[in-house]
Each structure stands twice: as C-alpha cells, then as structure tokens.
Image 1 (cartoon, rainbow, N blue to C red):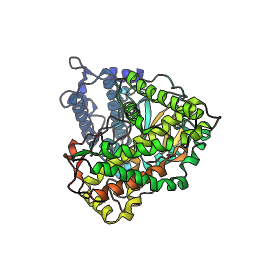
Image 2 (image 1 turned 90 degrees about the vertical axis):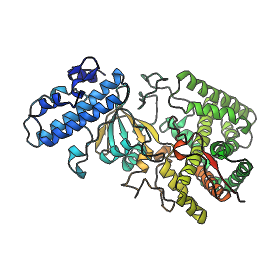
Image 3 (image 1 turned 120 degrees about the horizontal axis):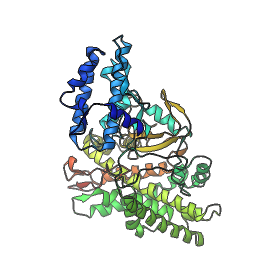
Image 4 (image 1 turned 180 degrees about the horizontal axis):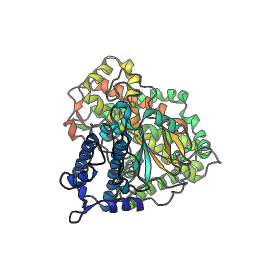
Length: 524
C-alpha cells in the first residue's frame, strides 16, 4: 500500500472529516487549479467524477484502507482527464501528474462507442457483487465494465492489483490456457471482497490431496482420468430412468404437503442429494450433517474457525467413509476408487469432498433459482409445459442465464497477453462466468430468458481441462426436475413477493436460501 499512501498524502486534506478537500462542496477549489490545463469538456467530466466520489464517501463509513484505494482510483481517473486534454493539444502542466504514483493505471475506456471521456468506467475497488440489476442479471457495474473493458484491472481490498475478466471470448481463452493456474500453492490468491472473519492471505495455501479442481496438469490429469469412466455420457444415459424415478418420488412427497412449501427443502436440495449419495455410496441418512457443513463452508463472510470446523467435519466424515470402503468395497464410485491402490486415503478423501460438494450444491441451487426464474417469466414456463421437447435447450438456457457458479480464480504464472492487456506474473485473476454468459457479443439479448434459444457454448460448466466432470449428470437431473415440476404442479407460483425471496449473495454458489411456493392443483 506504499504507493496508495503516497498518492493519498499528495491530495489536499480537510482535517476534521478525514476526506480530501477536493471532495468537499462541489470540488470547485480543486477544479479551479485544473481549469487552465484542460478543456471545458474534460473539466465537466472531472466535476462529475468528483461529485460521484463525494456521493460514494457520504454513502457509508469508510476505513482508512478503503480511502487509500479510493484515492488511487480517483487519481487514475484525473490522470486520464489530463492525458486526453494533452492529446487534444490543451496546455499541459504537471499539477495532476504530480499526484501519480508508480502503481497508477489508466481507467477503462471504450473509444469505439463515442468520446472516451463520456464512456470512462472506473477501475473497480473490489469485486462488484450487489445484484442491483435484478436477481438473475450481473451487477450493473460488472456489465458496464464488460462493455468498456472485458479484461480490466481490479484493485483488491488488500491492495493487490489484479484483474477481472468478464468478456465471453476472454473468459473462454483464459480457461483454456493452463498458464493461468488453478493451483493455490504457488502464489497468493487474493480475495476480491471484504472478509471480516478471515485473515488476509499472505502466503500460498498448501495443496489439498485429491482436490483436483485446484491442480494443474499433470497432477490434475492423473486424478481426473480415474473418474472419467464414472461420468461418461453412456453411463449417465443408463441412469436417466432411475433419476426420473427419484424426481417423481420427491414430487409425490411434495404433493402430499400443504402449501405454502419451501421448494429448496422439499425438492431442489433432496433430488441432487439423493442422486449423488447413491452414486458415491454416501448414506443418505447422513445428509443433515454433510449439508449443514457444506453450507457453512460455502459462506463467504464467516469466521475462520467456523469455516475450518465445517471443513474438518466434512473431511473427517469422508475419511472414515472411504477407509471403510477400502476395507469393504461396495458397488459405487467411492468403492471403485478405493480399490485403486494408487490413491491414498487422503486423496480419496479430497476427491470425495469435491464430488459430494459439487454434486449437490450446484444442481440444488440451479433447480431452485431456475424455478424462481421460470415463475418470474410465466410465458417461458407456459412454453415448456406446452412443448416438453424444448426442455434440453431450456436447461442450457437456464444454465447460461443463471450461472450459479459464477466467480472463479486463476493465478498468472507468467506475463500473459489477454484481450489486449498484459496480465502480469503473480496476478490474481478473477473470472465472472455470469458476465461472460451475458455478453451481447456472443448471445443476442443476453439478459432475456428465452427457452427457445440454443444456448450451446455457454460457459456455466467451465471450459478447458477443468470443464465440469458431472455436467451430463447435472443436465439429466435438471431435465427431469424442471420437466416433472412443471407437469405435476401446473398452478405453481410464488407464495411471497419476488423481492422477499432471500438470495444467496452471501454464498460462493448463488441461488436462493428458500423459495416459498404454493399451488391449487396437482397432476400425475
């Protein structure tokens, strides 16, 4: 933070409030000192910039660290004002330049859509996460940034200067490039949002045996290859009828309940939990424990001791389970893996942790949030009821539209060119699949849910060597789940206003915490 602190020191200060003088009033005192250097158009933009900065400062209390980061961003924007003025032949002095530190970057612009000064998008201070465009769309700041600069600098809360990738083409290219490492043990992966309960990362994290999602080839290849046979398209097809039976039984149970009912508890969570437990050989009666621990582990803002207790509870349980399967294997995936002497108990535990967590968390949230989306777009639900053959494409569209597994991280192992930018070695790179899946350069009217759309090519299952291993299983579960739900409950509707549905903005996998629904009739 040395550079940011120096930048802040060079700004004029207003002692009592602890805010820069240039943000007091309308900023005219500071602007008058710039007036000789820049043209009227840029001066007007600078005034708007300062007004917005003041609005931000007045909106809530700011820590010293946040003020330092804001000073960096403001300085960068004013440097851009100065640069454009100079490029147009305005008289140049060094009043703005004196404010620049070695770490200053130019703000994002998009000259192709008009005057760059009217299209400037500030470099974000932390990852924008507020769902201010609605429950299904990316945050507005991320959408604006994607349109202006699909590969953008990002200033992290701890001061790290990393990157945010939001454009479809850039995300796809990044995920196919193993120089963007998934490992967490070769450098510090910085967190792009405040985590009050967690200490800031200052050292690389040790590699967890078996957790191949956080590995690169060849270690990733070795472990993933041992699972490919369990998740082939052919094997999943053989399970399709059985999964449909599980869905129908769960719908039978739900139909016996008196509405209103929480769809998450009654349907969306039990279906994938039943399926993955059966496939892995995890006793379903243990679900309350592993579901509670996995939910706590997936919370963003949780104390370190709570997160570690949840992780320990899960891994201790799974270590005992795989040890029993190694001693007495059954007919399930974990037993098949346990027969392989090449895998240690620690690796088996890591693999089981990953499969169990991914196998029920993602699909459960996709089912619940997808139902919410369909209920909010009744014409789309009506189209699916009228034409069940639309279901395969509708599932792909819901995957694209919702992207419940949105944010992923990569570590740049060397300087890498991406989207016209140079990602520096050691940078933490944040990837937004939701933003990429809503990129109008790839999908027409991307913020519209359209079950007639052929959304193949979406990135919700990832891309490259880490593309989701269980994607065919998830597709089958969703086709059976959405199809059965719409057929059996033709009058299904929300039991509360949409704005009262509690969103999982506090979790690493997006969705809804609960979805109260009601109905007046059911069908077989």
